[in-house]
Image (tube, rainbow, N blue to C red; front, side, top):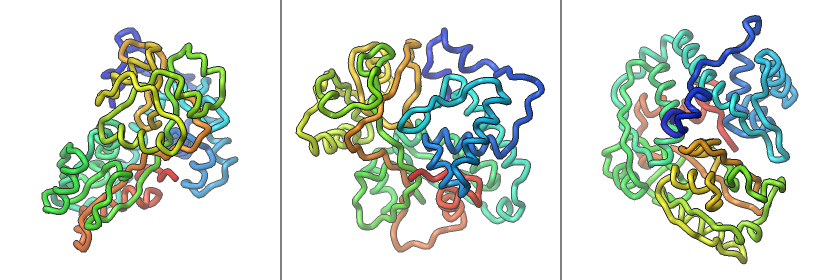
Length: 328
């Protein structure tokens, strides 16, 4: 999502103005790739696993990058790393640079053999917070491939795949149980507690469900988020004190930033500012909470077309194709 759409006017310059860094700095593609992997995974150890390199190599590359830029890109916590304000801005630039490199280094045989049209169904959360940047990179990798996106709820996606209206889908997989579909995991995004900038719980490095149960709770309902939340709450002796159920992520963001309540949502939809320009912080949950899982789906017992193979390979074999790092 473009930061200009969800940050207030007084934050526009912070997130949309060009970054100005020392002219003598020398960035490398290796540093950018390691930075993006760490930003998307939220843990240096997981980035190292997916990049098949040592953890110290990732740490060194990020340190070199921060020293070259003269600014801190990550905040280190006991649970991993989170982007600073500058880190969020730099991530957008890194995506643009890597996309340009994809275009410059496009493999001729991939570009020439993958043609046609691919109908992809996606749920609201996936389309709003995950898929667009990858569609851009896919269009760069496969310029003769046309991708048509369709936003639908889970039930409509499942029905459309079975009926053959859509070739593949990218959706939240936790509630999919149709035996006629093949599911391929892509990422698992950690859920954390969202609080306002001055919330007392920020004094703690981690919190429990017992503590969260005492707070006014804002529950997101879009993409069956409400049912998912009640499912993991039901495995505890506690229940959330729900003050609002809403299908709007921005409403949740505003309520939390304004200090009206707290929420438990995934890193994939986290942004550090509300529309009003107020800060949102995250806290690690000490009790087990399932991550938000995003994956591919297609109808079982069909032969995948070259275009479908291209999409699958982009997400499942990212190191070879130039796709996103796969989260575990």
